[in-house]
Amino acid sequence: MISLLLTAIHSFDRNNSLPPTVPFKCTVVMAARNRSVETIFVLLGFTDYPELQIPLFLVFLIMYIITVVGNLGMIIIIKINPKFHTPMYFFLSHLSFVDFCYSSIVTPKLLENLVMADKSIFYASCMLQYFLSCTAVVTESFLLAVMAYDRFVAICNPLLYSVAMSLRLCALLVAGSYLWGMFGPLVLLCYALQLNFFGYNVINHFFCEYTALIAVSSSDTHIPHLLLFGFATFNEVSTLLIILASYAFIFVTVLNIRSASGRRKAFSTCASHLTAITIFHGTILSLYCVPNSNNSRQTVKVASVFYTVVNPMLNPLIYSLRNKDVKDAFWKVIDTKVPSH
Image (cartoon, rainbow, N blue to C red; front, side):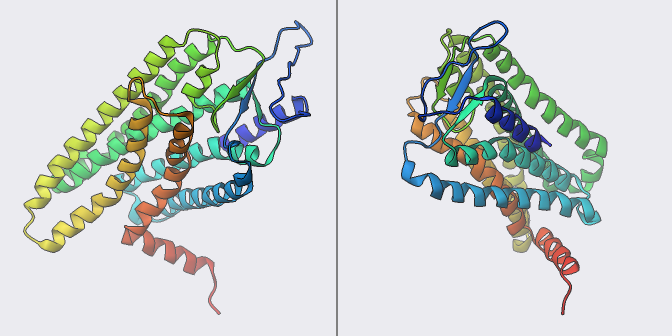
């Protein structure tokens, strides 16, 4: 649904924008009624490498297809298989949903800009893309923390697992992740809406990322930058504390397991989750939780690819390739859908 909404908005933008005669030529669009200057943004993307536009388009298209198939496939497998109706897979299905939404918010516009000369996006579309993408990122960070807590209860208190991780608690944890995921980005959006943008604004990024967006404003952006730093730092510190504390207890518990096969199974259960955490949080920390960072815009764009495009693609692969039950369920679905001759 989110993908269709953004596609419709982008289509509206395309049909109502002036056709560019020269790429990135500054054009002023006058509103018919009040003759005020309409705000338009241009997403530069990876235009520094014109010879790579088509190869990048093909690479990102393949990655997007894998992301959509992998995450929707994971959701369907969990939904139709009663064996996966457990808290761990309940959280995993929501992680897959968030990854699918996030990729569908960012990647279609990225693909469009790689092959189209007109790279403009209207003010409302840009603000919407920022809000939805930021909401997805924050929600994912808290879902990963919830999944770490779930592994802690499962490994350290297995006899109490079904009682401790009740359906009501699981629903509250997921709902809380979504609600907090919307709250912070909404506050930042309110400040962004108060900034002044005039005419044609060139954003040196491939999507409406917050720091790149407010960088083109003529207003004082000191407060939005401070809010972003504080919000991102709070999210990272709080979620990583939960994750590190959970895995510290898990590590101690696993070391006390006498059976070598039992230790391997416990570590294998957590390995996929730790891999996803490292990729996701490593990128976010380097981009948003370092005050006065001297990262170049090109470095920021490349790093952003990891949590916007690569991570949503890798998550279903990480959780399925290291999970025998998921792989068995996948091949069982394939066997039932593909008739044997």
